[in-house]
Length: 168
View 1: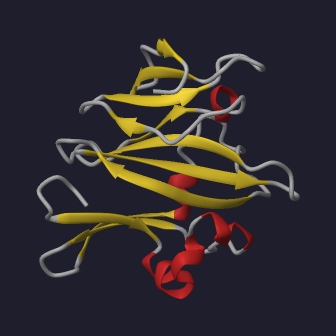
View 2: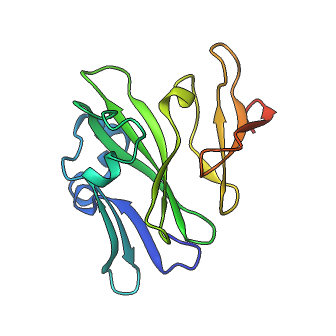
C-alpha cells in the first residue's frame, strides 16, 4: 500500500486468492504461469496499471536470463513518494538454487530497471527497503565467507557502497 493509502501493489491477484498463505516461499513449488504486477486503486479496486510476464522478464540486461526457468515475483514496495515500486524476481532452473534479481518500476516513465543482479546478491542478502525515493538499503555479503554488510545503492544501478559491516 502506498503512503497515502490510495493504491496497492501485488503480483497476480488471482494466485494470491488461489494459494492464500502458500503464495510466498511455501508456494515456490507452484509458480504462477500468469505472472503480472498489478497496481490497484483502494477506492474502487480497479486496476491502475498492469505489467505482464513478458514485459517484466524482458527487463533484465541479459534477455535470456529467465529462459527455461520457473519464476516468482515477490516483495513489492512503493517508494516513499509512491512513484516507484521495487520488486524481486526469483528464478529456478531444473531444481537448482533459487536466484534473485531486484527490479524497480518507475510509474512516471514506465521504465523497468534491474537494480541488483543475482551476481551481486548470490553470496547472501536480505530483503531490500527504500531509504528515500532513489536509494535502497539491503544487507548483502560482498565476498564469500564475509559477514553481511549494509549496502546502499541507487535504483538506477549506481552508487553502490557499503555503509556498515554486519546486519543493522
